[in-house]
Image (cartoon, rainbow, N blue to C red; front, side, top):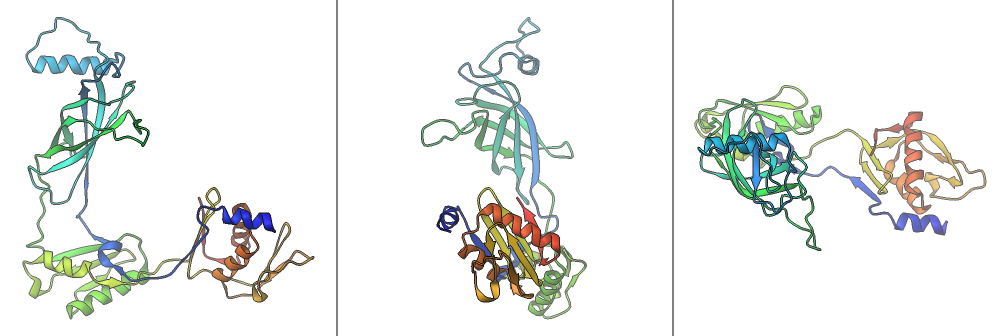
Length: 335
């Protein structure tokens, strides 16, 4: 028993019991269409100290094409230099970003470069899924470092404020007559609860829950032409979101996350030398079988298992068996 208790004490994180708490609407939902757009581009990082690509065809052809655009005739069909690396540049275009705004860029080597440290990204157009160029990136790359001074990922780096937005994504809230609110975690109870809350706040029938994850909102007359203020009002409302009963186990770290609505039916458990009797507390018995009464909360079971020093491996096996028997009234997710 003493060794088992030590095992539990050594866990990085033991038990969390999830309880429904008030949350702002902006933290559990988003306005449809208001999102980031992913950008991608191909470019070259130069100025490396012999740590670039060893001579891949794509890097060679890219440099020769660059020289041609600059009006430089090299007189060769091949270019070899370990001071250059071919990279893929990625960025996220924020919603409603305006031309001239700067944003960070991530560059990742696509060749056999050893490190991008000390390099400079040349002009790189960044395109969205529609193949239009929305930003242009250029600038010195930064690897960041650990406490020992070594780069964390030497073939991946960032260019802080390295991209300038050239094309805006059209969108305006001023003339909108309707909005669509999307829940991050669809749930019928939360959807119905939120639509009722919005109608109470706005003083009328302006919100309708279309399904478990979508709420249609009509702009009231007093907010006509002022959609930003309406959205600000709605997203700062507080609501208690509902969710399905769920148990999440991570055997490697010893983490057990349990929802407050988890319940268990009548069941007897025998697992190795463990004995469980939740009704009267955790006890050791020679018959090695424990009885759990129906309706017992999972929190009581956790306290009993914790008091006995159940290891993460035992915990995982017990909950999996409970789920397989149908006694665990919750979803079980093992990481």
